[in-house]
Image (spheres, rainbow, N blue to C red):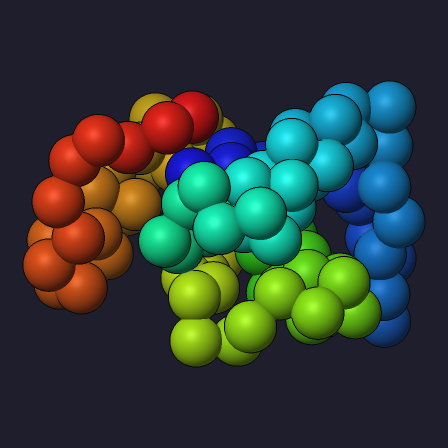
Length: 104
């Protein structure tokens, strides 16, 4: 599970990585090396009035560019903060019947 907060975007929905991009790098390494069966990206928009940019949706496009199979990517793009990251991700993992361990 890769919590958001490592990218930012504009009103058009495009994004860019921030200085916390190591989260993305480590998650991508686990997925590519098959040390993780799935990668869950959690993060919507922390903006008070959200625009089009949704972090997890944009990060999915970046993972695909690194040849991470779409079939192992899970996207939670509704959360606005860390508590919601955890709450919404837990529901998604339960719906997909993915058992522990979960790595953050």
